[in-house]
Length: 564
Image 1 (spheres, rainbow, N blue to C red):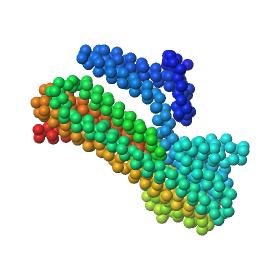
Image 2: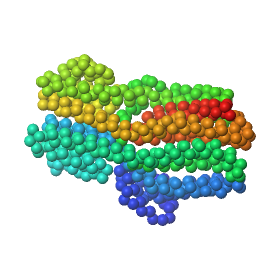
Image 3: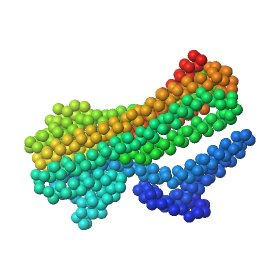
């Protein structure tokens, strides 16, 4: 029996997880049974509550009730999290998978252009995809193999609840196999239009729906708490218990937990996410750029520099705060910066992809071999795609391999551009090499479809731009700016002026921790809303925000304190 089973055995009551929890656990594919997992979560939250309650008994007598209350709140929050975290993770994974739906439908439709057989189209769409959605389709294709069914209908039924437009699009793809050839193209175009319209509509609805919650998050998670900092000295004068612990519990525990909960709700209700390419540390541009050891050494130097700088302009709370911000943020920013560069190069290549596919399609439709078409197109297309075509053409000549071996093989040139869309598109190019002239029209259609997909994705991100930009700027600059100014004003009100005051010299440190937490949470939430959760993009955004936020906080405090 594993740890989860032993913890679950300590729970005295019968647990009924409910159908949604069970479905989420099955979708995630985790090991323990749903009831066992939920019971273990309850026991673990209870143990944490007891541990925190024991620690609170070590506090001074006047602070023990607050400590016990905080322990109870953490236990209740943990029990609630045990029930909704699996559902949240399952929703996030489904959302990420559904971002690949338009590409999957496009691949199936384009295969139907070449050979009007739904079973071949389904198999091709599954084999040429790397998403969880493609893996799900592959399971249905395998299950339907002996029956002669394409597996598209059962696959659409699995995802019907979360994305009905996918089912309508795949039904049109399957129907295209039984219509006359002169009507097939129109039916397949309608299939892609159906899934694109579904993405567009759901994203617009989501953008409208989250405006209120995002505004509330900004107001009650950032604006109101930072504004109330200036009132803390007055509250203390009025006899309220404004102690370092009470302020820390509110600003460094309660408010961040509210931000986390609100962010989780926003992410859980996101209908579709367009995941970024998977760029691993093994990518040449990343592997050769900077090592973890170098990044950590840089972080140590940044921490020392931050400490020395802050010691000249801030009280005792300033140096450790800036050292943490620069010492953690600097390595993250530096280490993940090459990954960000690869992502930008991939996006540039995807923007150029429709032109390259159109050139290839016209040449293949005119009867030219795909190998010669690739070589000729490499001279007409610039940027990363042009370089990739040129590298592939050289590899074809040098190794005497076809398009598939040159671009998609184990050491194919697309290894430097790990984009699912690029690989799927060049799978169609390789198919054109096998099918010859009839595949030229499919490549021309693919060019149009890729352009449509990119426009829909751009529109979807534009709908969320205002919310994401507000979150980023608040965590990086606006929140630290207001917090530093209010701390300086509060310090002046306590009688100590710029140095921090004799009554509340700790305030800058407590609020500074709050600034650091917001600098980590808000940019990470913005990345999740815009691109889906990707560790590299989150690390880059959080690292940059931490470095900037502590500098803005300290500069704002020094400037306003100097005027006070």
